[in-house]
Image 1 (cartoon, rainbow, N blue to C red):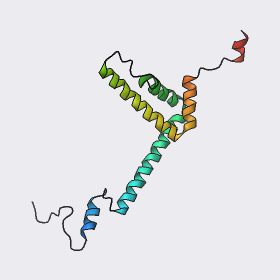
Image 2 (cartoon, rainbow, N blue to C red):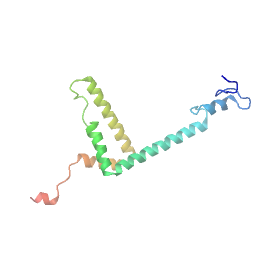
Image 3 (cartoon, rainbow, N blue to C red):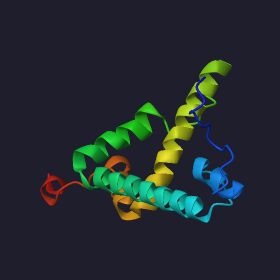
Length: 135
């Protein structure tokens, strides 16, 4: 190992030890800048995720796919106990259901009106047109 290599956090007489630690440890709770930056990044990420969910919920084909994912693939509304008495199947189905519930929670937080539209399109049968009622 060469002598000119300086390891992170080594002593520098120009910097106090706290500055060295804060410089190399962005998760340090004592570093106010690092904490604020982490909060800002988390908020930006949450905003981008919410915008992505809103984008999906705004598109009819994407809503149809999301409804298929939630209600058919993940079986969100079906109980996991009907897994043919196989504990592995029970855990598998409950895990898929929990994923669906998490997606539902995120959709409701991002755009509750659009999620209700998804439910109406998927779960409520269409009303017959007035011409069909007369027959």
